[in-house]
Amino acid sequence: MAKNGRFIKKSTSEFYREGTSIEDYSFSDFLHGYLYLKWPYFYISVALGEHRLSKALVPMIMFLSSLFAPSRDGPEDFGMNWANSYHGKVVPLKEAKRLVSIKEDIQIKDLEKVIPFTKAKDIILRNPDRIAVLDCPCRLARENPCTPVDVCLIVGDPFASFILEHHPDKSRLISSEEAMGILQAEHERGHVSHAFFKDAMLNRFYAICNCCSCCCGAFQAQNTGTPMLMASGYTAYVDSDLCEGCGTCSEYCQFSAIEMVNGLAKIIQEDCYGCGVCVDKCDQGAVSLNLDPAKGEPLEIQTLMEEVMLAS
Image 1: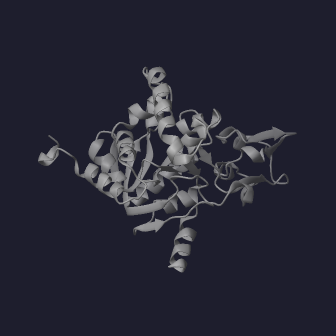
Image 2: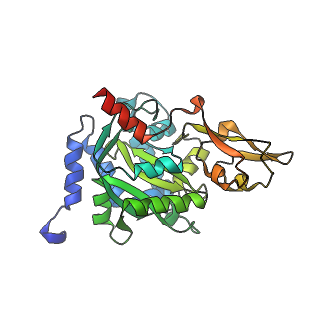
Image 3: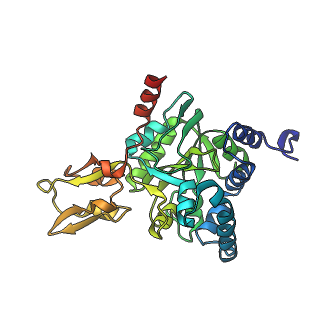
């Protein structure tokens, strides 16, 4: 029996109740979301191939996904279907901090220009100032993970309450100010903030993960051909007159998008995701972020909220 005499935890009931209010959210979606939230460390370690059962379970998961995908998405390969259902949008530090500073419930839909996938593209925040920090399942799945591990920010309910209630040993409730501190510290370590969206998570944004290319499952998926990560909408630019060729920006780039040519830093534009880490690592102020229409529209929460208010 669960705490306080409940067979089903309160957060589980809230998660299910909210799912029933979504037209295209099925019981199988809820079950998937429940399993993902209830056992994230097992789920992620299997997906990363780090678990001893990965070889047996991954083919089974792919087969089950193929059974459900055609009726919902039309014919597409497994990688694309996976990306449609589970993806991360790069957000520069300033915008990541804004996402954890919202104080009132919001609902923003029709984000095709910002989130160019067929599923999981809404920003609906209930109790947005309720934020849980969770020990990163990707990092804990690795033999020698980057530290610290408590860097995954679960934003708003029912997600934050679910994590806190089901994983009290690996999560804690934090303030918006503490969340911004974690984002700042991870940015200084050279890690990239992603706003994550998942269909099983009520078809919407639910977390900001601070990712390194060596541990992160999304980076791993991206590098093996699954387009799981979206650029921020910006591309870095180097002012060659200011660049001193120290190479620091290249060393910190998680996307390997900066190379040194003739003693100067050069951005490989097609590989740049516009995270902005390189901007703050350049003591000479030689690197900046420029809006890039080829990389989609940025996730600027304040602008999106204002657009919703104007349309209402």
